[in-house]
Length: 403
Image (cartoon, rainbow, N blue to C red; front, side):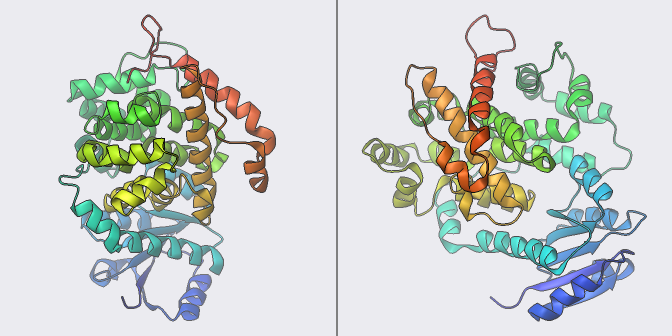
């Protein structure tokens, strides 16, 4: 496969010694250039690492690189304030590395980027994806919102008008905002109001989930896995993951929770007859992911992560979705995210089965002991049950979250 080619672009940062140490240690083919030479130097790059300076020039460059269609992984190294702003706005970096940049920290980010590259090139997953027929396209309105985020002149009005062009989509997003998931006390009647309350990034991710899931409905099969709709499951898991995630990863956990069942829903909607064989195996005692691997040669989380990686979602989201049912497989900053989605999924499934009179315990204190989280389990379990009740789509319930 050859050595990865790492291009380091220095936009005025002082944190360069650690980068040079990493490059020498790994003997990777690398090139360090200034911003003025960047666009001509990135051809054939595997990873582009931008060292942000005080004027934000590196972030602006990453926007241009994304618009140019480069397939390289985009990493941004910057201080904590810049990182918080970048994450909140959904800036065009696959990963944001917060200074001070030790060699280990930079190495972990690069390894994660290379892991995503390897996933995209995995012949087994590529073969499965190629045999599934038409795969979901990159969602149209979500893509347009990303372009809007890249604009220095974009406003909340612009974003609201963009979503409102699709009346059905706008209606569904408002339904979700009013569903009880976000603790909104008063009715929200416009997209602009929703954007003011929740922020553009969170509303953008709601748009992503609605656009995707509306194309992947397979209720008869999905509800043999968990007795609620796929839409409701996704939004409950997202909200629960946000509640249990580390403070620095709340929005990323929400996004990963929303998309954690993407690959499974592709299986269900594109090959329903084959997926019935998976469900037969599960009903005979097999684990769901193991049954998927037996039938398809890969499982739903891996296929979902592959799709998200192909669309250029942040690496932490890709990794969290990939390992959402086996969080011990995730590494670095992806591990607590994967654990948050795993825990949220189990607690939502418990609440769903309880709603139809079946009491099951899918996660216990002993399982969380190695993570130091066992003392919080009862509190989280009650929180998810209350969330489930608040979003009950029963007729007449205000703020209902319908499937």
